[in-house]
Amino acid sequence: MLQLPLDEALIAGEWRRGAGPAADTVDPATGHTLTTVHAVTADEVDEAAERASRAAADPAWRELPAHRRARLLHRVAELIETEAENLSALQTADTGKCRTETLALVHSAAGTFRYTAAALETAEETVTPSRGAYVTMSVYEPVGVVGAITPWNSPIASDAQKIAPALAAGNAVLLKPAEWTPLVALALGRLVSRALAEAGLPAGLLSVLPGAGSVVGDAIVRHPRVGKVTFTGGTATGRTIGRAAAEKIMPVSLELGGKSPTVVFEDADVEQALAGVLFGIFSSSGQSCIAGSRLFVARSRYEEFLGELVARTRKLRIGPGTDPHTQVAPLVHHRHRDAVAAYVDLARSEGARVRCGGAAPEGEEYRDGAYYLPTVLDGLPGSARVCREEIFGPVLVALPFDDEDDLVAQANDSVYGLACGIWTRDHRRAWRFARRVEAGTVWINTYKQFSIATPFGGMKDSGLGREKGRDAIRGYQRQKSLYWGTDDSPLPWAG
Ligand code: NAP
Image 1: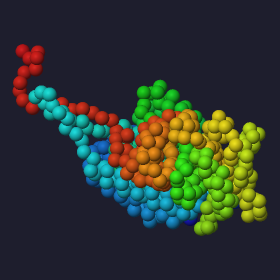
Image 2: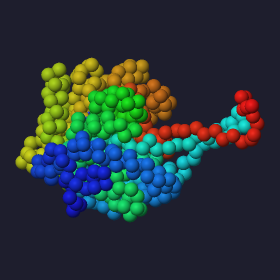
Image 3: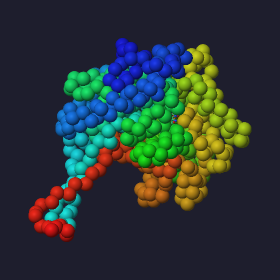
Image 4: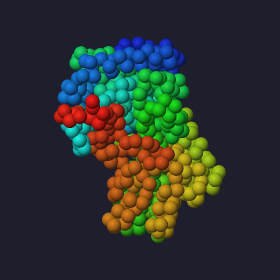
């Protein structure tokens, strides 16, 4: 584990304890307190924002050529890779996630810094067609101070997806991690601030500000120095942030919730589909925005497929994230486990068949952890709350469909539009359905695959804007058009 004072916040270039209330961070596998983190106050947010604004305007940063900012990003990637095992262990302790997953997230964070460095160095500004005696061009400038607010489910990956392009674009960043899982963001903050110091860049370009969303997050969003907010989290919070951003006429990007359909057509490769559906919903214990939480199976194959799926779900290995054999680790927090359990109880009361799971696992080894059995429900209409609302846990709801039109209607009958999975051997059908389904990402005969080079984001209540890809940096910049006169021909009102 990283030997760092993880109870300190990074406020305006200085590591110190926040002056706000203290909150324990708990290992959800054991219920033991890992450390106590002191939240920052709204005044400390103000201090960080003022310092960030000065740091962003400092010529040492603002005038730094792209290839030198890229060098900084590469250095951060290097530091993350050096600390990969420690960061992974820390994230497993803080979130409960499996070590294989947290290690992948750490390497993905390093990859994000490297990819962003390459995108930065190769980004071009455009000379636009001229209609007179001038050259016109479009240039991109930083917004100044970016507020980045992240959830608890994949901390280091979502932090990196925001910090890397925001810094690449020439901004300063105020990062607010989730109160349940602040430790990895604080550790990442140590690495980024070390790289900034080594490069002789202004302190205050990154602040890491732990604390409750309603206090610290809200103060960041409303601060007049903050020129853009990038948010990942629930749709209700995204809506609150969007309203506050509208008041300031401030750009905001929102990566929000999902209730993603996974579809098994009658001609699907059953082995592939079973593995994909299981991984799609139960990896990360279902705490994934793109979890395939609504399963649609062709009616002719429904019972056969569901029977086999349930049999395999029962065999999934439940345990702590530190055990390399674990497939389903505890949920992030005991309170979240209880919220998931309440959804299953609700489904029961609405007449669901609980095909497997539906309870915490029994056994001494699970007693103190935030465990919940992978659960498969069916027998409910699509209008039931568990078919419509994001549960964000290991709970799959299955429904049959009759034909493509019926499937499109059912799959799109959701406020969400984040992701979708399709299992079929018929590539024409896959193409047709992929184009009709309302989802920001569609996986065909695969699921939960990601590339930093491929834009990601939601439709409908799943969000606004895209992260990743070459254009990610542009999301943290303002476009400016320049006209350069090229000859002495008189303007209309010349004397
Ligand atoms: P959440 O409750 O919305 O919280 C997300 C972040 O926002 C946390 O840091 C939270 O702080 C903060 N926050 C809460 N209220 C705020 C306010 N009024 N102003 C500013 N910030 C505020 O979401 P969560 O439960 O942590 O995360 C789960 C959700 O994230 C799910 O809906 C999931 O689908 C979504 N998600 C989406 C994506 C995507 O890319 N689309 C990726 C991952 C997760 P505190 O919690 O510390 O109070």
